[in-house]
Amino acid sequence: MNERIQELAKQSTDDILGVKILDQKKFAELIVQECADISKQSQWSEAKGEYYEGFNEAMIYVSNKIKQHFGVE
Image (cartoon, rainbow, N blue to C red; front, side, top):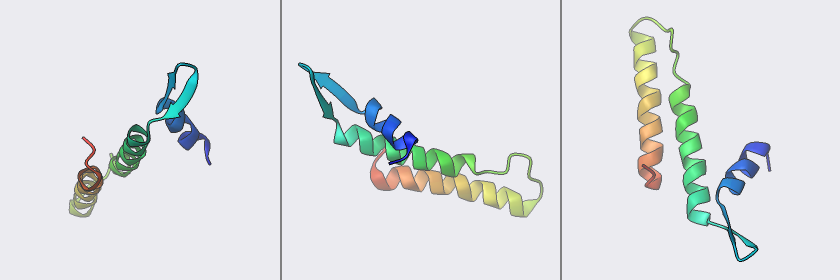
């Protein structure tokens, strides 16, 4: 498991009476959000021309579809 997944797991873990419990829903939501963010950040910010504008719109669309598919805000 890579370091980023381990960090997301830590963020999703609650300590209840000294017992660490992973909140599976929160963990899944964080992973989905991370994937959507990566897609959105894949835009070419300095791109010019119609092709690049279409690419940027596609990356935002994919980001939104990932979140929508998994029900993450």
